[in-house]
Amino acid sequence: MRKPNIAILGATGVVGREITKIIDELKIEFNEIKFLSSAKSAGTELEFQGKKYIVEEAKPESFDGVNIVLASAGGSTSKLFAPEIVKRGGVLIDNSSAFRMEKDVPLVIAYVNDEDLRKHKGIIANPNCSTSQLMLVLKPLHEKAKIKRLIVSTYQAVSGAGLAAINELTADTKANLAGEKFENKCFKKPISFNVIPQIDVFCENGYTKEEMKVANETKKILHLAPETPISCTAARVPVYNGHSEAVDIEFEEKITPDEVREILKNSFGVTVIDNPENFEYPTTRDASGVDPVFVGRIRKNLAFDNGISLWCVADNLRIGAALNTVRLCQKVIEMDLF
Ligand SMILES: NC(=O)c1ccc[n+]([C@@H]2O[C@H](COP(=O)([O-])OP(=O)(O)OC[C@H]3O[C@@H](n4cnc5c(N)ncnc54)[C@H](OP(=O)(O)O)[C@@H]3O)[C@@H](O)[C@H]2O)c1
Image (tube, rainbow, N blue to C red; front, side, top):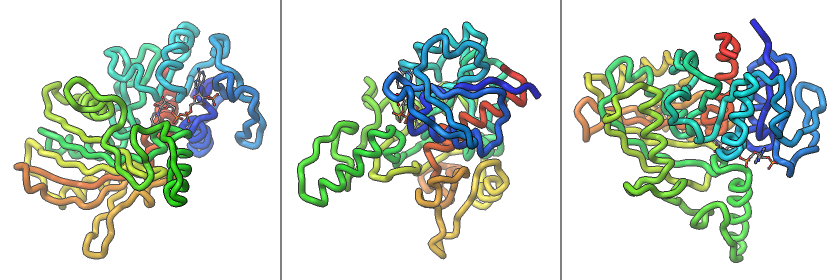
């Protein structure tokens, strides 16, 4: 197997740091690795696999000789550097939403739609965090009974909005407890002791962009018909890390809660915790810091024919961003696609 030269773009951010950790955990083999940021963090020292590296400011020349770039530096940075990376023969695995819905860009969750990777023309997109955790759960169920309709309600942690948002939850909570005033910057409303029914900006149809990402990305990844009805409500909750989702699915074919449990118990990347009589169901604390997508509260949905409801939690920084990015890198190496 060929070993690539790798660059982490956005290495000093929440997702970039997690990507760096997971490259080590998954034992990704590479020739050389470099860490890139904006001018702000350039010069920072970083330790990786017992060696010290200096973070460099990303410039077009930074990508000379780089085979695979794992980017988590925001959409505008990805748009700026994508042509430079592709021009130099590199493959960009991008965490931002900049390219996800472009026709020539595969949108992939590793172990769900790996074959789509073969269609890449230099850019591969990593789905939005709330879509990502759902795909490992929905794919095996869709294969068994075909999804007809989907309703998703998300309860999303602040880490999904970056380092500044994590710090804002701490500062706002302290100020609130001390009875002091606090000026929110990351969120439109105070995040401490609150639930905010807005993630990203509103679209003309009344949904937010985050909610439309869940609908559109799910259709692209699972190759569902464009007219498949999918509705999402996304809320930000005062949790540091780990997204939760209440999911209601109507299937074309009959499927029982026991069958769903059995299928998911045998599915890659999914752990079922579902014994409500003993209060056994997954919470965000179970999911934070580990790889599986946890599923529980599997039951017959009373509003749909052939309906199933379930509760799904996962670490949004891992499966929702960094873990899938590194798994995609692993697949690109294994499938010799760089
Ligand atoms: N957090 C999540 O759960 C999640 C999930 C999926 C996708 N994403 C996406 O991943 C990206 C990063 O998210 P994050 O939470 O890690 O944000 P973050 O903590 O704010 O980190 C941003 C990173 O990007 C770097 N950066 C910013 N502007 C740059 C530029 N012009 N050139 C080079 N590097 C630049 C920053 O470098 P400095 O240190 O120099 O500022 C930092 O390393 C976003 O696109 C986000 O939408 C995040």
